[in-house]
Length: 172
Length: 195
Image (cartoon, rainbow over all chains, first blue to last red; front, side, top):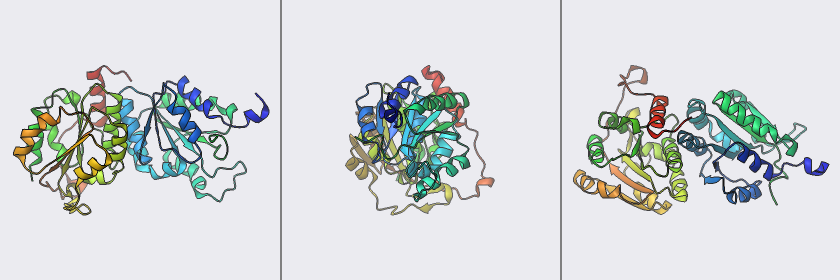
C-alpha cells in the first residue's frame, strides 16, 4: 500500500471490519459524504441494510435486533447522534447491550479548529453520556474498529467509532 | 370508542404464539390478560421508541408474528417510523394503535390535533401493506382474527376511552411487573436465543 493510500480510510475497510465482527444489520441514514460506502453495503450479501427516518430510531431498532440474536451497527452522522440523546440513554445505555455506533465526524479537523458546531459538541456529548470512542482517520486505524467491537462486547455498552474522514474517503 | 381492556380481550382470542409489546397507559392492561407472558416483552425506555424497537425485533425474527400495541402520543413522537417500517416491509409485523386522543399518563391533555388525525390514513399513505380503523367493539371483535392472518406490515387504528392518570409520578402505585431486562431474558429463553 502506498503512503497516499494509507492516509485515507477506504469504505472497504469498514466493510471488512463489519464482516470480521459478525455484523448482520446496518441501521443507517446515509449522509452526503458516505454514498459510496452505502453502495458497498447494499451489495454486501452478509449485511442487511435498514434505512431509518431519524437517527434516534437506530438505537431502538438495534435493541430489537439484539434481542433477536443479531449484531446491528448504527451508522449515522454526529448531527444525528446529537439528536438521539434520549434514545441513546433509554434504549442503549440503560438496556446494557453491546452496540457499536459508527458516527461521521462532520466538521472534524486535525488541527482542532473548526467553524462547525456539530464537531464542537461531538466529543463533549460523548463524555457527558460516558460513552467511550475511537477516532478512525485512515486505513491504518482499521483495527480500532475491531477494538470498539471488543469493548462493546466486554462492557455491554455502546461504543462509538468516530470517522474523521469526512472530506474525502467515502465518496467516489 | 372502545374500552382498552375489551380490545386486549378480543385480541387474546386470536393471539396464538405472537410476540406482543405494548406502550402507553392502556397497554398496562395486557399483562393481566395475556396467557403467554414469556412471549410478552417490554420495550419501553425512551419516548416514542417502542415502535422502533419492536420493528427491529420483527426484522430479526422473520418467522415469528410480532404485534405492537402502540399509543398515539408515542407514535407522534416518532412519526417517521411509519416510513421506516413501510420501507422495510416486515411481513410479520402488526402495528395496533390505541388512540385515546390524549396523554393519559400526564393528566389527559389532548395530543396535537387530537380529534382530527387519521392515523390509519397516514400509515396507508406511508406504505403499510394494509390498514384498518375501528371505533366499535363489535366490528373489532369480528375482524381482528382475519386481520392477524394478513401479510404485514399491517396497521390497525382503534379509538379507545382515555384512562387518565393524574397523580404525581412519585405518588403513583405501581402494579408489580417484570422489568424490561427480565422480559427480554424470558423471551430469549422461550425462543432459544443465546446472548
